[in-house]
Amino acid sequence: MRPLVVLGDALLDVDVDGTSDRLCPDAPVPVVDLVREWRRPGGAGLAALLAARSTAEVVLVAPLGDDQAGRTLTGLLEREVRTVPMPLLGTTVTKKRVRAAGQSLIRLDSGDGRAEFSPLTSGVREALRSAGAILVADYGRGVTGHPEIRALLAELADSVPIVWDPHPRGSEPVAGVRLATPNLAEAEQLTETRADAGDLAKRVHALWKADAVSVTTGAHGAVLTEGGPCTTFRPPSGVVAKDTCGAGDRFASAVAAALLDGASTADAVAAGVETAARFVATGGAATLSTVDNAPEPEAHHDGTSAFDVAAGIRAREGRLVATGGCFDLLHPGHAALLRQARALGDGLVVCLNSDASVRGLKGPGRPIVTARDRARLLTELASVDAVVVFDEPDPAAVLDRLRPDVWVKGGDYADTELPESAVVRRHGGEIVLIPTIRGYSTSRLVAAAEGA
Image (cartoon, rainbow, N blue to C red; front, side, top):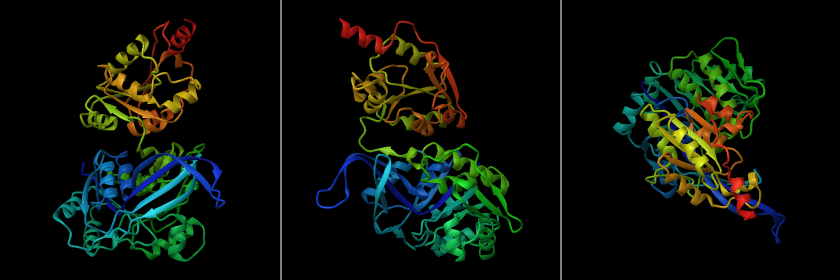
């Protein structure tokens, strides 16, 4: 199958998490004590990373800078996406959100990078001509205004499905794109009209020479017109958004992947609505972030990332197994579980509760062994291929990135609905419960030691 090519403006997104329990003495503003930074690709970079969840091969064509932020951005992408750089004028755009208690307090934007209108390289031309489908992720930084890019896209539109995700400061789609996907606010701004989504979709379709237009409406789904009556696609009932950041990119990337697979436009939009709804329900774009200063969050025998290990197993068409827990004091019960889990596939990743996560689950006296040392001990076991540390009470977010074929838990969870079950099954994985060895538990060992 030919690759899905994402074309657009790539950014660097940073979430700064902290705590805030007091006001500044010289102004009525909160003081935030910084705890950690999370970094992820933004703009077309995020769209490409999300597309990699829906199809095997993704290529990102975007202006990429050689400054520190640009190198960080490229490093975050290279695990799952092949990048074909274009020249960038200026510095990499970085958007930094400062948050406390899950609430965004302020966003700080820096960088002035824009696409340079220099002649296209042979690499860019070859990448676009090799595409089985193209997603244009316009973030208003100049890529969609590049004359040669526009001419090439107009030429390819006859034979390659193109999804155009527009931006208010970007250029309008070239003629013949399969689908344009403005959101409700963008459609209102474009048409200078306040109306229902169906009317807006028809107005945008009349303005642009696109085969179809889909106006996305957040929690209400999307409205599609292909020139005739509108069709409304609603998300599954009962799905509640935890974080809507990245929803538009997830919708557009899922639509493009479906078109790559040969779906009709209507079926692709339906798939996009459902995929985006489940994406925001499991944490949104934050689930793709990499923590900047967690204690050895991704450990492997040779120092490579746990996600690199997972990608390597998938590339070999192997079977990825994952399990999780605190593993505070390693004992024979743990060893048996890990050995049996590893036997179920071609590689085993352990999702390890961080120190803060263990304290939240077990109480202030735990853990006894720090996450750094627990990760080191686990990676010394022949059955363990890699370890990834997570801060949340359960590993659902990290499993959304790992996408294991098998998720293993001890048999003591037999009568419990695991909070991570939905994530595992959504990615096509199965859940296996392995009987535990009687007489072994960390809590029992701790109690025995305290009574000695």
